[in-house]
Amino acid sequence: MRVLVTGGAGFIGSHLCEFFLGKDWDVVCMDDFVTGSRDNVAHIASRRGFMLVEHDVTEYIRLDGQLDWVLHFASPASPRDYLELPIETLKVGALGTHNALGVAKAKGARFLLASTSEVYGDPLVHPQREDYWGHVNPVGPRGVYDEAKRFGEAITMAYHRTHGIDTRIVRIFNTFGPRMRANDGRAIPAFMSQALTGAPITVFGDGSQTRSFQYVSDLIEGLWRLMQGPVNDPVNIGNPHEMTLLDLAKRIIKLTGSRSEIVFRPLPVDDPKVRQPDIGRARALLGWEPRVDIDEGLQLTVEFFREKLRKSREDCA
Image (cartoon, rainbow, N blue to C red):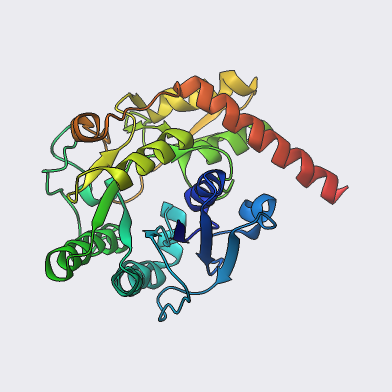
């Protein structure tokens, strides 16, 4: 089997590449390194069956040989990234998805779109089920990401209905783990970096807004099952355990033994107040649910950031 992972040098993409290599698949990792990093795949770069292709998927994708699966993960995915790269985010959601679907069509490959819980916007329904259409501000600053992914879902279903492509759509809820960028603006890497350096921990708003966090290995298992499952409609993959961001900050302070203080800053525009998946569809159709406890996952992630910080200090010494 041979799989193409666009955005394969990103946080989730690199874990996928590693997973498929572990199953003795051939892996084509495609990335333009706008937000991805060669460091994320350096440990597998010399593995048999691995090929790294530097390419912007908003341009035509030319790839020789067979492909069995195409997993489209190319996109800025953190608020900081898509606020700094709004046009690039829209282009990769539209042109990039179109090109990735074109490859799947030409090769007769099964296709997966990495969508997001952001398609629900600032939801008025809680928890969020796949049949909820969302509450999105299309012209707000976050709209570039929300609408790029909503368009990606629409064109994916159009290719499925029109061309008979065997497609999957995963709506990924907050995921964390090793290989996240410390400065990508998401809560867990931000809180951990601040805690480990003794800097104040920045909580937006009053910290009462909620999120549901899953460890990356649970997501990878969910994607594997989804690709083999009998479903073309969107499927939520996330952890239904909900917590406030203030509680998350306190957990990370305790876990790291940090003396950092919590400081509060104004809430960003259109920041969702609640975010929690209904995973009934994943349970029923895939037999999937998350298994890694939040504290266990946080401990593994803290160890990654602590080691990364140590190496950075050594490089500066």
